[in-house]
Amino acid sequence: MTLINLIKSVLLKISMPQINIDSSYGVIIIQDMNAVHVDEIYAKIFGYESPESLLSHIDSFLDLLPVDIHKLATQNYHDIVAGKMYPRGHTFTNIDRNGREFTVFSVDHLIQWHGKPALQVTVIDLSVLVEANERIREQDLMFKRLITDSGQGIMVHRNFKPLMINDACVKLLRANSSEQVMGIDSVLKLIPHQYQVLAKQHYQEIICGNTVGSTSVVENICFDGSTRFFNIYDNLIEWDGEPAVQVVIEDVTDKVQLEKELAYKATHDELTDIFNRSAIYDWLDKHLGNSADLTCFLLDIDDFKLVNDTYGHHSGDKVIKALADIIKAVIEDNQGAVGRWGGEEFIGFIPTLDMQLVLELAETIRASFERLEFKSEERAFNVTVSIGISEAKQCHDMKRIESLIKAADKCLYLAKSDGKNTVYISDLAAI
Image (tube, rainbow, N blue to C red):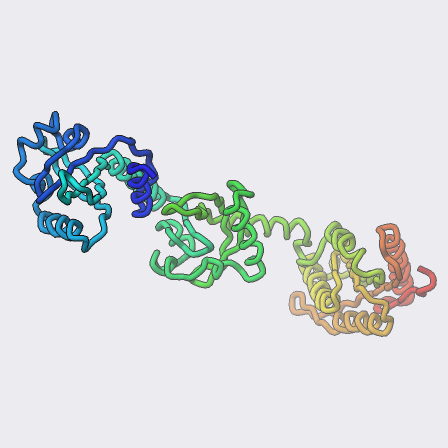
């Protein structure tokens, strides 16, 4: 190994930045603390035009060193010459004859000079290296200030341990301070348990470079216990020399809630807060493969036109809402779905063919509704409901569902024809 390669190797071991170093280096030979030989490069490093000029301007080798290390340099020389210490590398800041401050890395080497022990010192001027390192630090600080002062929430983490967080992110996470956020072991604690496995997988994909600049909306549990939704953009960066993930955070809770409200309104009847007709078909489509057995309920308020004409549409709305609440409680408690089928007509589905259970549920709905007392202008009145029920096996397609609904509608007609306020159920064999 050449001497310059040895020096570079020592530089790497002391964790200096990996920047190319000029292969030229200077040499001085010291004997009895006097400079007995210098080469041209060494002289120029210290601001002299020639070796002769340098040697003529100093009385001792110590004149080339800062005063505060004279004692250490003297002891170092004597210990190496006496064999008490192995030669080693040194880094120190110096000032040349022109007042320029520079940093030198030196390696000592014990030699024989004219038959007597001497110390050969090989030096490299690290000024360029130090300046480059300083620029790197300044750029790093500039970047950190940029994200610290950003109006967007920004976090940097490695394996979910926070490394940096700006004030905007502290506010978004509803923490008391940045110290509170930085003090947690893992930001996984802010992610609902059911999503943590996906979060870990996503992190590994980013760190491995398989995912670049992904955006997603995630649910987070904030420090005050509230649940918020964040649109996050995460990307792989280098932080303090190692891979990390930078996350840019935007609170989209209001947007998510608005979308949920709009989606809910699109699938629910405004008056009764139960499924509308299209949502019932969507529910059926999703559940066709889950259960081959279905029971269909069709319910119609008896003499509803008379209710509206006698007590007014406001009272009519109260009647519709009251029946919807009863049906919803009974049907949904049995893993079913209920919707508004028409003006005063409702439909419900339960994944069962238990006739006894079905009749009990229908009777519960009929009797509960009949017992309700409505008031209009201090006048009390009661209303009844007729129910048609059909059951069928192997409901795997919408054609089968339509046959099931038609059978329930037929039973509802029979219930109405038989005096109303009653329940009719179809013959299983007929469906």
